[in-house]
Amino acid sequence: NQSFFEMLGEYILDGFNVSVIVGAMLIGYIAIIALINGLVSGGFSLASGGAIKWDFQNLIGFVFAPFAFLAGVTWNDAVQSGSV
Image 1 (tube, one colour):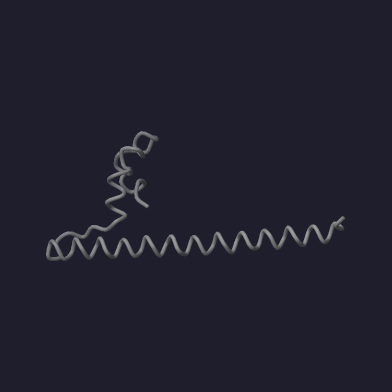
Image 2: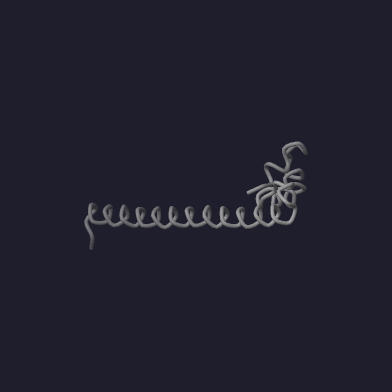
């Protein structure tokens, strides 16, 4: 049988642990996207001699643009809203 304050402290610590885990996952996700952006951008730059300035986010934007358009986004903004 726990007192109210013991239970409250336990839930606060659990919430803190969850927030630390979510923060670490967010940092990892952003780092992976930056890594893929660099690799894709470098690949396009090497293949085209620096003429093409595309990255992973632009490619994903073009892939998901039709879905963004179907969701009600205007076609002019669909590529930007479809990107990561």
